[in-house]
Image (cartoon, rainbow, N blue to C red; front, side, top):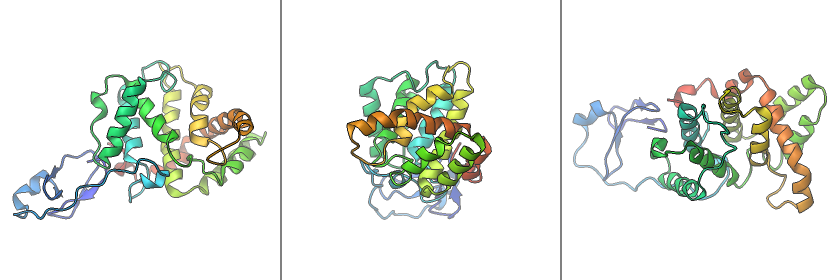
Length: 259
């Protein structure tokens, strides 16, 4: 189970990472121990809809907090399971065709994601995560709050900068904020791995354009040029915030999120 759901027989929740049984005909989901009490015959129901091909992060997020898309959780979990000894994590590109194929496979699957353990190259998994975030209609740092993030990151005093960034992060929509917090904690773990050789500066260069983006969907060429160094600065500043700040958004419901 990726997204916690109630058992169709006993109604108690089936937690993340636990085994479950699902009927191919009616999509009824239940604990393995509840199978003998399953109603028969089943009543066919429409199959789970795939996620949209594009949208904002809230369109892919679960209905229960923390509001982090299952695709993001699964990619991050896979990277942390077997990728923290890979040099150049997130900087080394995965095979473009495989990245595209796996991203489409995950989007079509919706809430029932296929296991990423069969992807031999961990850089492909990294590529899927980056491509998903890049493909959102709006970056995690929303269009409306984009100027505020840039201004906060430009404050020279570290304490004042930290206070301003915390304030702006708190203004983000819940799904954007939870997903950003989940990713910041992940990137901090990557930055602390000596084998990855990806410090905060390297990670901010990779994720600046993806997470911060621009203040509109169609920026002018001059804006793209001017925004590039400031995007990296925002991510570097966000990664300088204490982990406890980010844990406050996703830590309390962590059992819903991480196996």
